[in-house]
Length: 224
Image 1 (tube, helix red, strand yellow):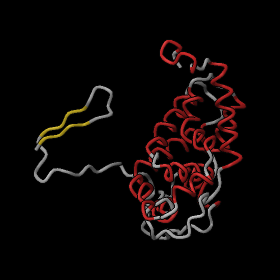
Image 2 (cartoon, one colour; image 1 turned 135 degrees about the vertical axis):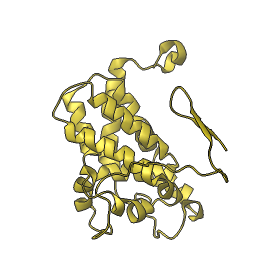
Image 3 (cartoon, one colour; image 1 turned 180 degrees about the vertical axis):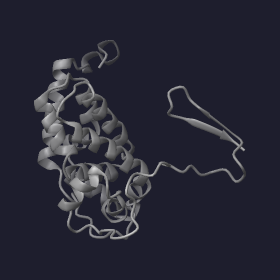
């Protein structure tokens, strides 16, 4: 963090490394399937009457913080083999799904894209033996972009309506599906690779005649 902006709350590079290790270890030790013990996939998150209480009980502040900010701490560090191994333990296993599950419960699924983008940039700092971790981070970004709607609507649909449709030729499918035996399988007609169209925007009732993008690529405006 910039000490001029953050004052007493600034974190220097050495602190960032400690924070990256600590948050990753918290994820490693605490992530698990169906952490809030939701009984049904038929209810939207907003329809689970005691969801807030379950989140408070099952996702304590240190775990909530780690899920949301581990990658930002990671990106502020220099490449480190031991730290990269910790990243691989999360991104390269079924724990990546359990992490997304918590983001869904917190209503912070969008943070998953920025977090995995941080991981990608960090891994690209060094030519290393973590190519598969890089590919899994990229798959994770595409997974969220394609399935963010059901993930935000109902957390169990991360496993029910999203995971079964991960393209079969992706590394994410190869790594995660064998670990989650209860997930449905698509035995015919499924996608082999990620679709080129990642997001369909709705709103216009007529033909779109113009579009413009912000310089940072984060916003789009269209006219009809």
